[in-house]
Length: 195
Image (cartoon, rainbow, N blue to C red; front, side):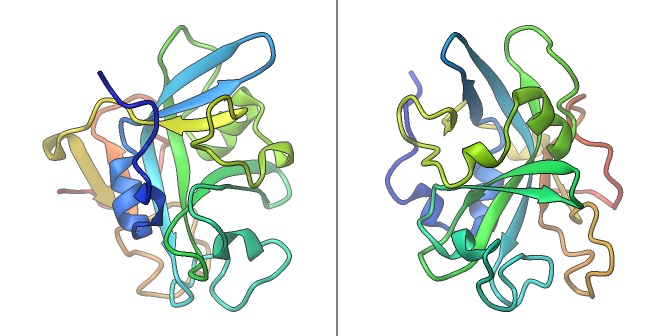
């Protein structure tokens, strides 16, 4: 039987470790009258002030201050003023880092496209009301719990998606993980490598 929560310190690990280990974990969305569960199939890691794609790369701003906070809290922001993005803060307090959940697979029935971070937030109704929640707390409106581990042979790694004008080496560094062949992985670009 799988544990109900991740062990203490799980989210305090480096974002790259958390991003890989979250593949196969379960994203739980709870409303007062119902609950849906979906398997995480794609993630991206953002870590440290040197990472030119990380929102905390320069210094804390009103938007990025949560990235410097307690690991295991949600970081929800709006991308390009259109799409909400769901992330989980990682690494020790003071280091700006998070994992973006890019794709999830519904575990019971189908209820809309979830093959992309904006799509999954729209379908699961995740928005600013779910910012800075403890994703490990029992009964949290949005939670992340352990799921079935994914074997390395089934995992691919490649560049993050939508990096725009991010300079190298951060534009093409392999900080995106996904489950090979899963239909709920976003339609990103970039070369994939096996682990």
